Length: 522
Image 1 (cartoon, rainbow, N blue to C red):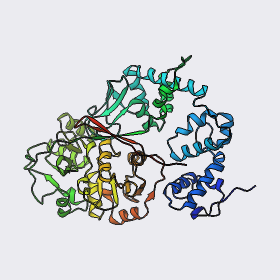
Image 2: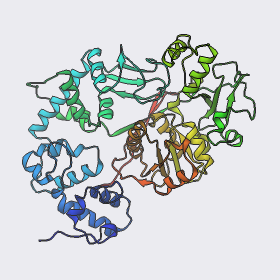
Image 3: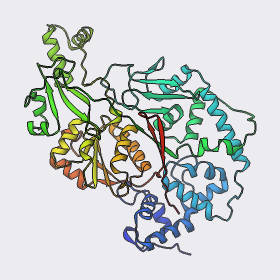
Image 4: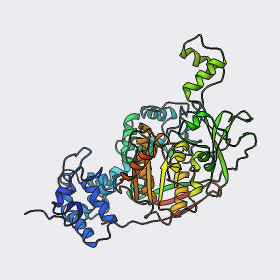
């Protein structure tokens, strides 16, 4: 008997099972992602009914493309290891995987009706014990796990922020490993405001779910659990199944900044500013100034970006060195009379005399993780688009090219404080607003992209696009033609993450406010 076929769109006349198992059907979407995305977005009842019928009838024929049962159908995996479906695949990071597995379990006549089977009882008890053993490990042991993740850490201090906010700052200054009041370890950065429970930190950096991270950490530390005493799974289930059902946002009102001592002179900018194709008009529109010879603070010889919060209060100044690193060391070598020695020795001597190159310098008290550059101009905007880039120069270029609703992250990933600002701007239109993520063509930019998609989809944004600038490293170096082409060819991202319960940590009042949102699924 032949399988049923679809009657709509790109998949019209195609076999339902074949479509569901296609590795690529459109852009970067798999067949399953395409179907689930159509189900969630389509207003056509026929489309939704056919996709629902496909999942109900053929979910067992879906072929898993990862893990220890890679290449097997759900039906076959069920015969081998039912618990793998119930305890692992139903909690996969990708929403479409969870849905097809849950649909299979719901409509498969062999479904187990009891709430928890014996395997689950033992499994969760084991995971609970692993978690307690990890939290009870020494700090030196946890630091060893962090080193295996690829980070340098000594005595609880990271060489640089693991989220990349301080790559140009002094080493061992901003990011730390600490133990919290609940006796669990956490990683935090005091510059960008990022903070993660240690196990969730591993989840993020390795791409694991919670239980996978527990197993990996335990293997690294040599922790084994034998003869676990029986525990009520109902008491510990939330620790592992619902651990990712909330998204934490952070609200903090930063102190206002006084511009006394900056010595800005109207219309005066260094050659480095104009080399980027920018004009005095561009600078003044975006409140960008140069701290030159009249500057009496640490911002001298820096291009200064004024940062305002959503209430238009001036809460920070970010100063970029007018020199590139190469130009800076040339300048210092000449100033210090070091022309007779090689470059490596020049730089060593320059650093010894406390002239180390610092690309960015922030005003005292400014915490970039709680504000988006240029977000203040979006408060009363009625446009249905927002463009998110990394740095201030990227923002200025995009605004110059007509993309007025552009904001900058001061890094690669959206922090909890920045997500709060986006939520405040668009909380009532999250299902309508189009979010364009402009990806820097480097390893850090591509790595941060998926984290940003995940955070925004969990916050409730559904129309997220990936903009790739061909021939340019970032928006700050792109031409208008390159930016326009990236916009026209932007790739809509499949909806892979559910909306979550939103928890707002308010550092100004020390209160938590919860907002609950619900999704419908098959």
